Length: 224
Image 1: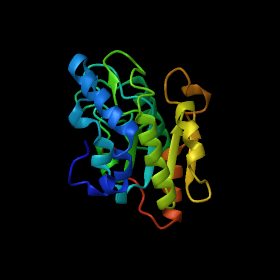
Image 2: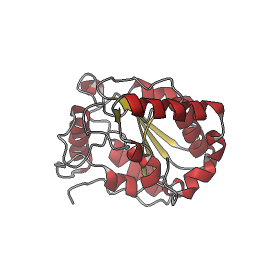
Image 3: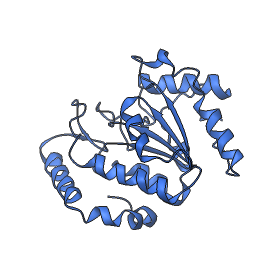
């Protein structure tokens, strides 16, 4: 569950916790934790919320499932634990980061520094069975994360929503483009990265929009 000190999310999403789908989701997860290895572990599942309190959100980077390899996922989309080898998609994100705003190439894959500055690194599904991609889809997570996106859309202004790939872009219908900036590009996966991800300049475009609306920019460079 979300950590107690981040009461903002708990209060804002309190209605979801009472709904039947959410109670069924929690029951499903308890059963899965008993019979299988699930990533990320229980204590990390809500890290996106715990590391980026509601009132701090400036940018949303939407992922799909957590990584399903051993010890990779720790609750932030596209991020891996500090000691883990960089996944291919994250390598490509870093290549674009270097090309876009001139950061040095990060050596580690932990994106906590972004999360702490208001980059909400949200997956649409927050858990997965080991080695079984997509295994926790359609269990209730999508409704919960849709409610999260709707909340941010309705109650905030001048957020940046970064939607990479078709699954993330299906959430565009939840976002008011008159209130927020939507940046879309192909997924950074090696399978699609050359179809327009490289050169999309999401980092510089995000900071330009934030500055234009009187909001402090993100320090994207991870090795500074």
